[in-house]
Picture (spheres, rainbow, N blue to C red):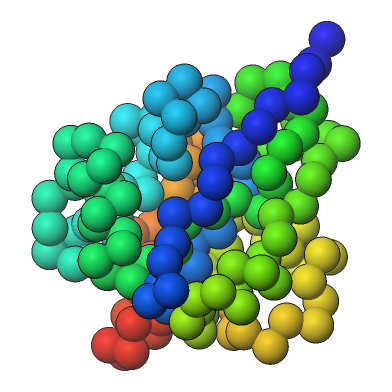
Length: 161
């Protein structure tokens, strides 16, 4: 039997410009209580590499890293019923209040980390004016992930293209 699981608060500040929006935290992420907590997830290695930095060792270091680079982190699902970590198991979910986050920051670009985040985002926010892009999930379960795709998207998001 599944039970209601809760995600994390967004990491952002008034200077954040790029929102990276996942689906819902994995079991390993929920255990450490922070985004992309599975050591096999490619998120931290990919984003830190883009900026030429090492992956921070601590949760606070990761928070400092994203804020320094004007990145906001959140998940499109804030609570749901789920067994395990697979996006296909998410049901009876609550959608994040993306509109308020956009109003309280300088977000000008949204990167959707995976198909489930994209699917829920476009159904929930069909009228968003903020440009967005769907990327392959950084999850270790995704065999189609490429760092090149992420680097290209980050280049566009940060005006380096």
